[in-house]
Length: 488
Image (cartoon, rainbow, N blue to C red):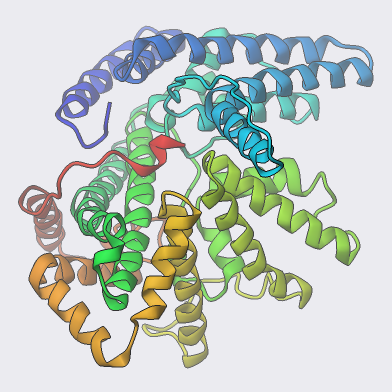
């Protein structure tokens, strides 16, 4: 079920009403509403995948209890290894089996041998990468004795299957979300109102900005041989805008929806395109995944409190694993590798934690130094996204070659001008510009509209802004596109 669908528009009010009515009967009933509605939400795509979600949830609920019951560290470790083996085994099978088989075949061809192993027609279950990491956080935290295992299966299934963030995050930690199912929710009007604002902004980002940019980004990427360098560079820029608005839009809708039910989900994006270096970008982009890798892989490997060689090793491991998490394609691995190369100079010069605050925190405009840092970081990010978007490495190299082979000063501006004012149209250009202006002035909040009450004191003006955004969504909605991160 898509957030930007009629189905969800009908589903959400029904679940909202049932949830708060169930609160009169007690906590268990509220959690049951969450569990049942989450299974309906997930099964909307294909009910057969529910068995996998149930298996993963039941498995880790049981293993959490077993880990806690063991009297020796060695036995506790065996139980943890079993959890890792089962969870990652399912993930590898559904997501990476054919990738490994196909590369195994290619390796043999390279040495002059031909083999014909069988590949499988495997359908990737929606959200498997997300809920697998979420359940793993539970067993790992129980093993580390940072969390008491729950004996309430309904609360645990609600934690794993919580429908707002089930299929594309944020990837919640058990230490944050699970305890919230132990306390009966009490409706908070201000909290719910803030959630609706965040949902509205998320829908605007997804439906108006991301979906419209996707149409032209796809046009350029799918037919890159037909375009000049200037248009190809514009295509990379459009995808850069698309992926941010698509994924952060999903996160805003998820977090806002959770607020309607009295739950707090972790922040997933913090205006990453206003970052002044790559290290800051990765502290602000897909925060739930970045911090997951930091806490469960990077720090256990020694983090940055080791020798220079091991710091470099750990950095490359994290970024390559992050790339591979996104999909079974060499493009994602290369994308992760490229970001590791970007990050490395900051790490070696010990400047990876230089920019911890908000850009232009006490002024309207950034300083010249901040502006240059932001521009360079953004350009590096745009270049890296080409590999993320490309179908394969040959596609990526062809696209990049096309940019630089015909990127002459004589034609670049005129080509971009013709494409923008011919095929794209001025409306999308204006909407994207206004979007970035709103994000810039809202960068001190959790999302662009969070602090609107403080910046716009007049209630009527605020409601005019809300209605304008809502009308814009209806008038300028792009062709419906599936959320990009559903494929991961």
